Image 1 (cartoon, helix red, strand yellow):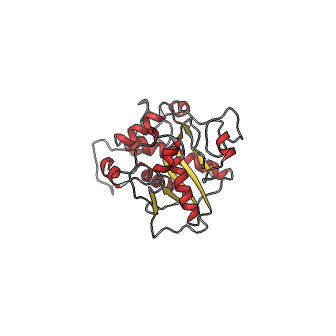
Image 2 (image 1 turned 90 degrees about the horizontal axis):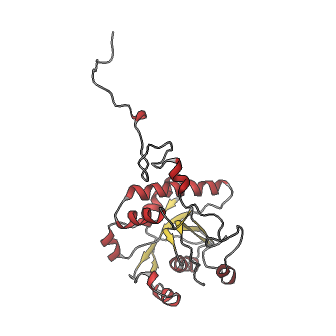
Image 3 (image 1 turned 180 degrees about the horizontal axis):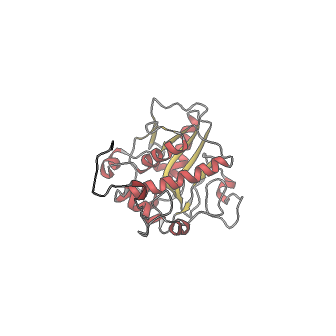
Length: 246
């Protein structure tokens, strides 16, 4: 006796479904939509400053700026230098809403962080995405840092506190300003939500790219002054530009 009805057409078997690399279009042999050659060719960050992740010629050193004036944040963790094709992937994710590219980079960042946790890196208590000002959020439609924090939260088993930080003042693009103007620009740009629970917490800021570190510095100071014990920075990429003085 047959307990299943006969079905003559082809049956979809999801285990045989092919996944394609988002960079080159070839089929992949990895859990993520990126093939092994493309993943190997990404601009992985090598020797770097042990604090701000600035690319350096040797490992285990601090850059001159961090040695002279250590920033408020403890450490920056970024898997890549801001170079091709990562720079293009981040731009398309942020400004063209190519979410699959952001999700791919977020998953690879999560893998990199988990490896470092396994090697002894101290795990934070919560992830805090760098907030966007309301006008920019309306224009873009999403906060790329918040998406990254969500994509890191589940695989790493870390709380994502999207609303603890608020951007209360929109500011001009940081790249167009000198160091003094950047610091002044960010002086009153951020605020804490009343629901934020920071006392003696180890927190990690999440963003896409760290350039001068001015935003991370302003937020880390705000968190530490409110009682946080330590602030790290998790981002996708680091530009070859020194962090600003504290």
